[in-house]
Length: 185
Image 1: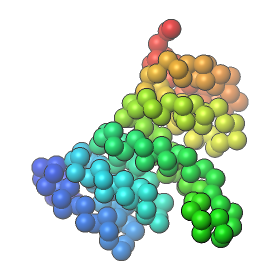
Image 2 (image 1 turned 60 degrees about the horizontal axis):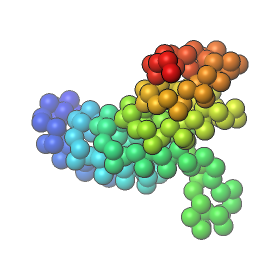
Image 3 (image 1 turned 120 degrees about the horizontal axis):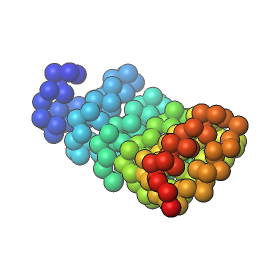
C-alpha cells in the first residue's frame, strides 16, 4: 500500500476504494486506513458506506478513523449516528424491524475522536451526553472530553468542569486539559 500512497491523493483513492468491497476483512480494514492517509475527499462516500454497512467492527472503526483524517463535513452525520447506536435490540423481532445492534466501543471511540479532529460543533451535545454518562466506559468518556477540548465550544465547559471531580483520574486530567484549550470564559 505504501507505493499506492505515494501517488497523488485522488489517484491513490481511486485504486484503494474498490478494496473496501474485498471479501477479506483485513484488506477492507487496511484499505480504509490507507484512504484516510490519502486525505482524498473522493473516499468520503465509500468510507461512510463502510462505516454504516460493513459487518466487521474493525472495518467500521478504520472507516471512522479515516473519515476523521480526511475531515470532510459530510462524515459528521454518519459519525453521530454511530454514537447513537448505543443500545441494540435484544431479540430477533426487534432486529427484523430495523433496530440495530449496539455499536462496538472501539468504533464509537473512533467516531468520537474523528468528530473532535473535525472540530464539528454539532457533535457537542452528544459528546456532553457521553461525558456525563457515568455508566459509559471510561475510555468512551475520556475520548468525549478530549474531543470536546479539540472542538473548543464554550457550551462544553460546565460538563468538563464537572468531570474534574470524576473518580477516574485520567478523565479528570483530560477534562482539565480540555478546559485549558477552551480557555477562560
